Length: 277
Ligand code: NAP
Image (cartoon, rainbow, N blue to C red; front, top):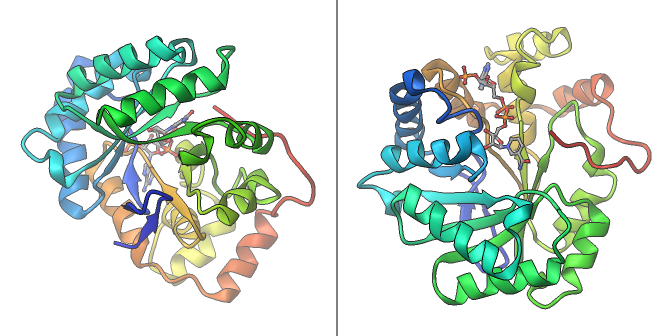
């Protein structure tokens, strides 16, 4: 699989798996574990989770899916803004590690900005990194001004990624945030890459989909997979969706396809505030 390089030098795959809405219902647990295992078997070894998802339930699902194969996986988790104090982030990390049954996270992200000063959060993250509890850290839902502020603080230049809403419907970051991050080799991690099923019957993508013997959702994902310095983390429990997401890597969009896509889903022509879920 194609990879992107973090500033620490670590190479990570451009396609992974999300876990929001997992770990919420006991009846879904086996299907969710099997889904993540299938994704890992196919090569989607980056797994994104958060203490928020199912209030720890998603991390428990992940722990079962990666049991015995921790080394194969690139594990990302996120902490609540209210846990972003120096000691708060250290404690939250310990709880996540315990639920995930692992002794380190590959990447640990501040889920969104809250009221605790960023400088204090960065201090806590640096402590975790030095202690080997996390290998890298980053942020989520940060707009360009937040990134600029973070960059100016101690430890801010070590921010490895910014996880934001990015897909064909939400292209606002192309105006400033994406180039800002590209210039600094900070990969963007695109969440909701298939816009939570919104492309399934999208008539604007149907012609291109037919041409590539693919679904409109696969075309939307393929478009993201072709962006420079972007990692995509679709969530799928249905095995067919998982396979389709993986095979989206093989779709070779032509220049003509890209032009058609740009006409239907216009890139931004001005600064737009960061879209979030
Ligand atoms: P998403 O990945 O865009 O969409 C997930 C939905 O799309 C599920 O209902 C899934 O169905 C369906 N789906 C997946 N692949 C499909 C395919 N090939 N064809 C048709 N339907 C497909 O939305 P998301 O879960 O919001 O975002 C992905 C991940 O990003 C999350 O799980 C989470 O890890 C992360 N995230 C982060 C933030 C943040 O604030 N940092 C916010 C939102 C999400 P099935 O499950 O039935 O297969």
